[in-house]
Image 1 (cartoon, rainbow, N blue to C red):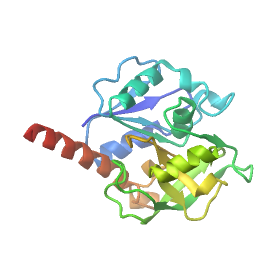
Image 2 (image 1 turned 90 degrees about the vertical axis):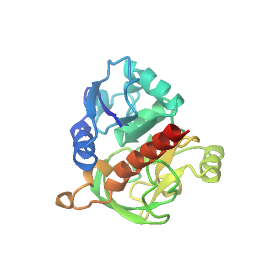
Image 3 (image 1 turned 60 degrees about the horizontal axis):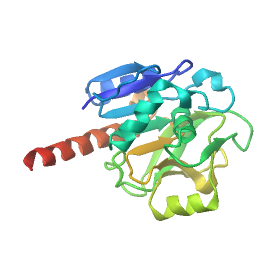
Length: 229
C-alpha cells in the first residue's frame, strides 16, 4: 500500500504524518507537493495539518484551488482513501469533498491539549480496529475547529453513520460534539484531532495507531478478496 502526504506552503504536520506511516506501518510513503498533477500511484492520501497559505481568507480556502486538489477529488471518486487532519479537514470541506465548515472555536482561543474522543462508527476503513463506543486520547491543536452544518446536513450525517468521532468533552463548540466525519461512501474522512501525534507512548498516547493500521488492514482485505476472485 502506498501513501501520499500532501505538502502545501504552511503545512507543518506533514512530517508527523510521514513518520506515523513509516513507523507504524512500514509502508511506502512520499511527500507530494501541492503542484502535483498525478496521484494515480497512491492508495491513500493524507492531507495534513498546519496553516496552508497562512490561513488567509479562511482556513483551507486557498489550498482548495491548488492543482493537487483536483487529483484528490479524482482519487476520492475512484474509491481511494483520503484522510484530512485539522487544516486538512478544513481543506476537504472547502473543496466540497466533505460537507459543512469549520468556524472559530467558541472560546475564540487556540486550543492545544489532549482530548477524549468516542468512536461513533467502527465500520469505516479508518476505524475498523477500534471498538464501537471506545474512548481514545488524541491531541488537538486548532483555533478554527468548531464544526458546523445546516440541519438537513446534520440529519444526513446522523442517519448515514457519517459521524466518525465525537468529543467526550467538547473543546470548541462543534455542533453535535462532532470531531470527525466521512463522506457518504466512507472513503474520505476529516477530523480536527491529530491521530498522527498519538502513535507512541513517548508522545503521551498510542490511541492514534489504530487509524493507520485500520486502513492498511482494510486495503489488504480488499486486495486479497479481489485476487481470490
